[in-house]
Image (cartoon, rainbow, N blue to C red):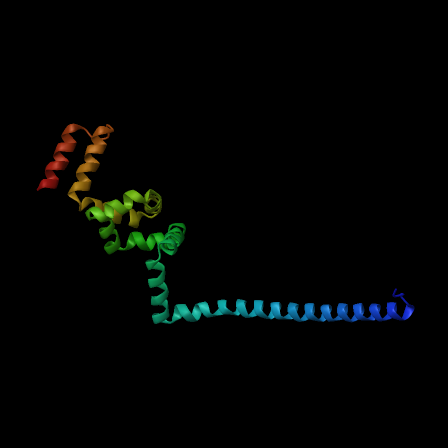
Length: 171
């Protein structure tokens, strides 16, 4: 039978003290390492401007975004929420003509009603953009004809006015 002597208790107590001190030192070292790594991770954000200012890197980023469905949806969400971006889109004749013409453009707009609503709201608040959008619609005999039919159905245009307008479209 082994008896616990006072000497053995002191030794066990000292061993526990050493283990506790060692664990505290390891915890401090880990804490310092974690803080250091966190600071290093934050410093990468400063490189965003460098990437965007380098035309080659910026093109790589844009290609990556436009090639990935989820990232492209995020980009569209950002564009729709940004008035300046919407004004730029609406002010681009090339972009708007592509969107307004052909089956592909119309199909895209049918699928994304939110984008169409946002474009309409933006155009309503900007007279130049509104005129631009109306001008593009007027250049499309199909859209003008459909608009006249709709106005006639809603009682906003009489039969004679609709016929006169359609006749002008065919000239």
